Length: 439
Image (tube, rainbow, N blue to C red; front, side):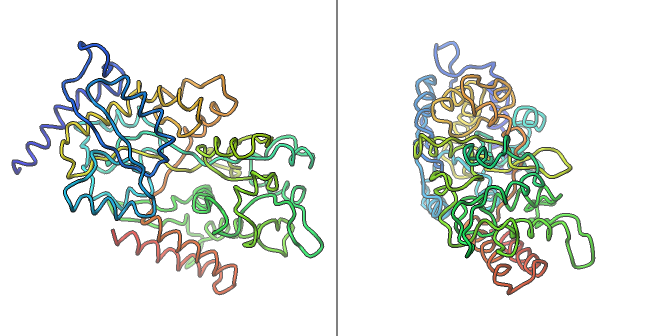
């Protein structure tokens, strides 16, 4: 091996024991001199997470860790790719990036691969939730998991109760049965109260996640990898040239915007779904855990609850959503300092602090299994959100900005009857596969 590789591996092997003990909560960083680590310095973190959601956590971390000080800079998600690449090219990269799962594929060649010799596969699997596996490779991990943001179903209690619906539907079959009871329309099919937001793209906050969930519940991995290659998986193929499971998932999504169907309740002319929900004119809103404080703040009088998205008739309960991990840029100036910081940031002590912050801000969910096992009892939502985090699944996104356009066009071509569903599926599969090949 080259001298660089020998030094690099030595650094991570030295950090491995320390990292394992920190993950396990055996080593507490900060406090008295007898418990502090000899690794010291300031770690600058870049990410797209709202800085307000990180402020309390960062402040608490710096209060309790005397040797390692962290700073967090929020970057624009739409330009993060370019900003990060330019920083690497200029020799001024951050020490860590707080990486969402939809940028894993894009940045895999720009991040240090942490070998299993430093963070073993067994430790990773037993410490973190299953959706964190999105960060792993065949020989290590691209990022150390930090937090999750599962997709959930917000529902308006008043609208459901007025329609005689006592509980939010747990299955898609039950969900369909409630739509005609909740949707209010005029004689010319103008929608006055919408039941749910599906069947369009641009006026829905999380269309990609909803589509991913429907595909995954149909038996698809949606967007994944196989032996390091990007794969578009639309589920079991039922016939030559066709995929009945993917077609059924697509038709289900599109049905809510079809004026000829009894479940018609949404169209491209409606306001954005979250705004309509906050205004109490949408019965079901598919949003993320991190939106809870926003919804509370914008309408404190809104009578709503949270449930899992409806499930298929068969299979294990699941949802989807974002998961975030700390990645180390290959050109980070102090690899040992960066790695040590990740072990503390994702350790039991820090994740417990994140949980305390959640009870005040209800932002991102912890991803350690031991922390999720300690459900908060003082908040009506957090125990449920912890359960949602445990069953969350993640998927790869080859390029978030361009895949948004591809999937938006996918929906538009079906709506305008330019392509049939199976033709549109074939086209979008080709386009997404091409994005996966152009890192």
